Image 1 (cartoon, rainbow, N blue to C red):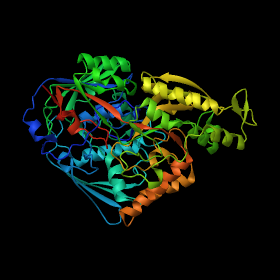
Image 2: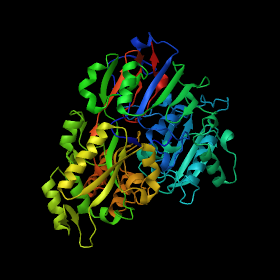
Image 3: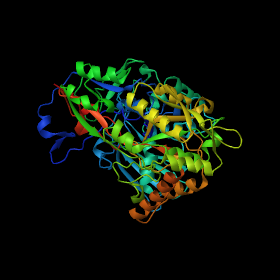
Image 4: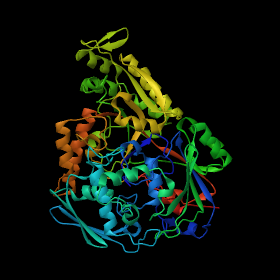
Length: 568
């Protein structure tokens, strides 16, 4: 699974409260483990109007959402499992060890031989090589649609890889063209090497374009995913309804307690809350604007938590109508000065949010620069307007216009169905208008927003979304690097490229590595390749009859592990 992905802001469910001071058994407090019941079904609510459209672990940009990753992650295990403490847990990983040379050019991975595919065949290094061959081919600019691969240029994949070598059935090596920051490549490069079932899927071994087309044609075909190595298999998928999973009886890890797990489509926030009240949904979320009525959900428990994500309002630098304007830093700075983060946090998120200050999440602040604990551009409408006027803009009929007659007027798209997101973009609209910036708001289904990413004429600005780092070292190569796999919006800056490159290089100490990360993140915060928005806490709702959600969830990877959940 490629773990870096987009999600809808303020609606992720079942993130984490990290529990301490207890004895655990398979990730569950020992006292609770004694009362575990087997069987039953748990329904987990997706954010409103979110479809899961892609079940293949390798994803192109049009299907690179967190929720697609959840579905594939239930069926296919990553190479390793990262705990909430940002450490690899080898007891839950296919890899049993990862070693590298001192130069950071050769990485050797051993695989635990206990892992098997559901057809009984072992998970081997050849399966990982199959994945590498797919990634390498799918990353090419001329890869067949819907490729290229969303993870291209993240973690040095594929361009930094000189060679892939199968040493034996349970060991492989990745050799690089140059020395790299070993931790960066371990987390961001090797993380892409999720084993895939070569013998079941490699239909066109001598023609990678045909193979990619074959896999893409089956990317949303549930019956195709019959050979798996994860805890669950997909039983059914009905768009705009639900995606149902049952336990994989051949799973070599912690076998699920449940008989069935469902990811459920929700038409709106109110429909989701109603489903919580009636017990139709057992794991879901409380919309921020309903926080005051939380006591009405008497059958649930609420716990707020933060994920390792970066909420953004994103510019389309390739837009035929607005791209040249968005490339002007003063315009982006004025827009950032028009974002009233304090009011958004107080009025829309009930104080349960932290300000967006740059590309590194501020909660938890593990990788955060000391200079980015506060926004570099505080809310100041007058200063934003003055900055525009200083840089050649003047107000005509209430809208800023430049010497070419171009207006600061554009469309802002955002995910539909979420009342809090709608209120947030309306606040942006009102405050920007005071600066002479006129925007039209357009709610769209989340899947539509994703599909527009490779159609520059279809969008100008998108809001109400967040970038989930998904357990990776938070450098910006794939997002902000020129030609990065997820840099579909066309941002390019040579200084940014150099600073990103420095975070990928080896450093003598952890402090030196952090200094390089600080330099990159501070520059990105100053340059505003997108607007940095408040990160709200997820208001997770869990039925009192459901257990194991909090203790098994993970805010760093933004993943779910329902194999550890059970119900009374």
